[in-house]
Length: 564
Image (tube, rainbow, N blue to C red; front, side):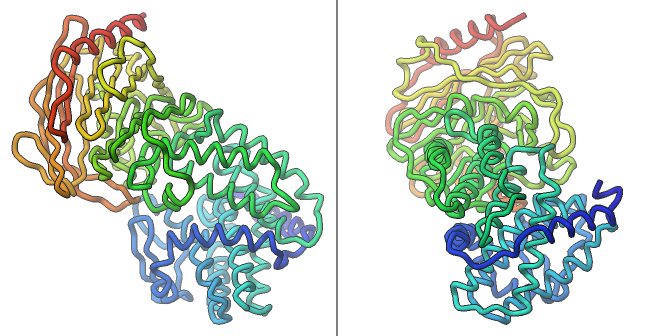
């Protein structure tokens, strides 16, 4: 309706806004605002002086508009116009730490920015509902303006015509979101809509019938978003962390008291987050995830215990000890109804050694449709077994998925007894090509990691496994790497000699860093193909070829049992 009848739709939103009470400065809003400030300081706190001059730096791009009054909200950026960059600029997250300073001059400056946002994004402008006036953008804008208002008042800022204009835009955003709830996409988008409206409810001095549905709706959405083991349905550690921020904000905004089910959900998500984080205190980069978009994991949840921790429904297993940790992806790529943030990282691993990341996911270079987006999501770019020129997921554009496989953990007791900590998994994404794949991972904390991969139904020439090592580790002769006084050696127990070449990874969105790509072809076996790689950094190599062969036989037998 919005795109086809913008004038009529604008009237409807204005009418809805008139039916809403005006927001006020209230304690629940201030409590919630402190969580929002923490989030936005992580993103913008180091660049406030630049932002005040109209220079914005985020998502791998820096654009200098020459002043807040000169922001070009619909700037031509190439790369499909980088929809995410435009959206993020319009979230106005950068206004929160500015308003927290309590200065009237900041309020006036932000009012001018909002005036230009509205003027340049009239509803008959092509594409405006895909970025600046997307409901997800308006939800962020509502949260940030209300949080900024509360922090400004707490810092001694006074009412003014400029502040009244900011709150007027926030009220209009509330009406817009109320008229545009994202019940089509659901998941993190719909939850963000509800959190934004809950912030607005916290700013009201009275009840309003238009928002009475929120508690029921939030609970229904959390039943969809949060799985039984506390993991996020999208299987993205980053979106999991962002959801935790939303829930903490929601808890603080609840009046008169937060419901018990909300606290239980937060606790479960905090425990689950630990399974997906490294000893450095931040998240693994599975699916659409990158570092710096949310507060670090250690700021959101207690550090995880050593040993073996599993999220059986989400599909992650963590093996850890002596400041070493492996995170193993052995679950679905996302929710069946909308796995928009999925990567083909089935059976992939990330590894930290002595607290330093050693095997890493490639990260996310872009959200814009094209070869870079396709490449970073492909199975051959992740640390898992793959089939050359075949994908376990059929990607459509940037956020759509067609046919897709799945992975699941294997708990066969015959796979135990080799390593003190181990995990195994099977994935069926290559079944349309007649191929079954399985992996076993064993960790000797402080010493070594053994990985055994098997393929059934494909020759060794078309099978492969790739590992990505950050460029902060120096490549040494004889397939070794060194950093910070630690040396890691690669031994191929089964398979061809490794091929090592330069590569890239994107631990922060759009910001490429150097890496080393290690590629190994498996060896042919009577039942399939097998690769076994032993990474050692201790004084004793704990595993031998005989153990790797026994594991491979068990994995191949499992694959044979799944053959048609």
